[in-house]
Image (cartoon, rainbow, N blue to C red; front, side, top):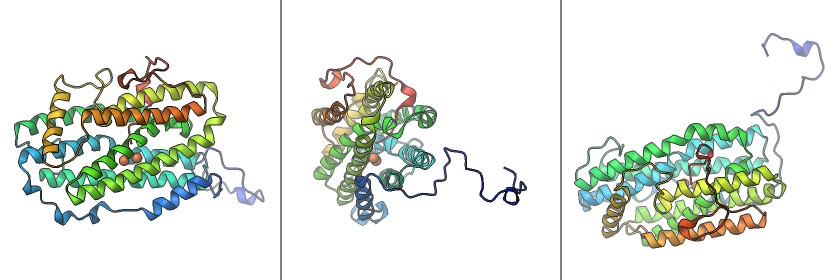
Length: 341
Ligand SMILES: [Fe+2]
Ligand SMILES: [Fe+2]
């Protein structure tokens, strides 16, 4: 509309604004649970810069240990550094579709939390490597070289989904988009609590406690959205969720378990290098659950999610990798997955 169309001179009230429009002028209350989660997020705000960094001395570690621990943070950041823009996009959608006020605030809180997680990854990596960019940094040890090559491949794989995600956001309802994300949140909440419990450095222990708590809230946001919207889903959306869950499993396995080769395009010795890094990090006191613990954690997160989807008669995909039977999904839509947790 050109600013010179002087509509106001011709009518008493303006014409209606086209919808969907990013600009709701309303603050409807609906899902009470979302209000509770929002208040919790306000109480539990934290700032990674305020952690006891002065107790952390990277020089008390060998270069191999520093590079191995930095590798773990880099692996995490492949997921957490994509989260702020992913949620910023979802936040805009909550405004466009004029979501309830508390739902908008909850998505805002996830965006902020994920920004913190991303900052935390950056602070840890920068101190450990003495360099702010793990892909451009010059490795000091043989394991550091291999870890960096792994990181480059992870980054390449993680970067493939942004275009697809942007296209998926306007097409699908929030509760469908975020179905696979819930599985990540459930598993992430557990893994961070385990890492906090085993951490030796106060700075990492505190960070993992905060991150684990944040992920628990994100999980609750997903659950409330599902509770509200899944009973009203139509059949085509149900089968889309089944596929999303399978895609989410494949994607998130890279950080929560081990990356499945049918999805992740990685060098043949990738897993071997990752296991070597994890072993060095563990010996240096940086607790990472071992592969059996990871599989168990991942499996119970998936079973939890299955319990939720069963309530709404949404078929669950087969995940034979962790011993879960269900619907065979072969045509996973790699373009529409949500690459975060
Ligand atoms: Fe996160
Ligand atoms: Fe999260």
